Length: 374
Image (cartoon, rainbow, N blue to C red; front, side):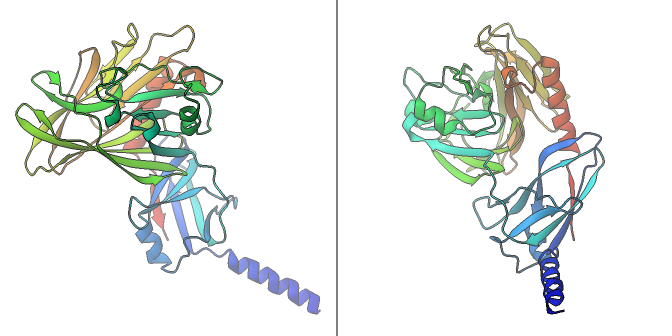
């Protein structure tokens, strides 16, 4: 009898331990499958439901399957800002998630960003699909100087930034990819710069960086630039980059600093002259541009893109680049997306598949996952 009582008591204790502290429903309002997508949940709403939640001792479970859901506490450089979850939903599906007490499983990081002083002030970042870098002050005026966004062709879901920089031999494919994209003095794979009198005005390389969050599911950082003279006006810019696990596109926010009442035309560039004879797609109304390189017999094909949630003001080719124009105003950042794909990575192998990915991405922006906290 005593043994039975102990079993019942233990069962009751375990059941109680798994009682949800908070319940969250996530709905896919679109007709598209949402695979391994990052969903944002306001931490303020979590606290409103359970003010005493232990941030080091909770996990998130799928209510239907009891499977643990990977998450990240997004700090945004401050106390907790959002709970980030990585979820998969079928078209129109609704899932229920329970936040329960307990030690979460360790998550293998899927995003990473860092300042790279050992390579002339590069700033590099990556996720499980793509890798990028922007150039720093120490590169200015050197024989290797370059201006815009560089994309690395990786074919592994493992993080490779530290490995490649340590080896110094990342221009050769040793099985996990290589850097063969050519940027030069252009905007590369979707960087942005002021545009005036029909020309790109390149600022100097970034002068200050701040990492806001660094994985395991999202990495974000800010880069500040010295003021640049644009047609007699001094323009000072800040760029904020955010890259989520599973995504091929960065979210980029451009802010005009030290200005109360300015407007500045900005150009987002996709270089064509460095890899000529590829295929171009330029649709201002649709808000999508891409360049699909001519296939390199040895290294394959890189496709790069720029995308905005609405429309570009103009799209045309100039200075060996596809230029996508938007207007930046004081206190009103530009938000756009840039990134790319390598066909040898194996998931997107054709130009048509790349365009389909970009159009699906736009549809997901228009119909984000819906979240309710109970």
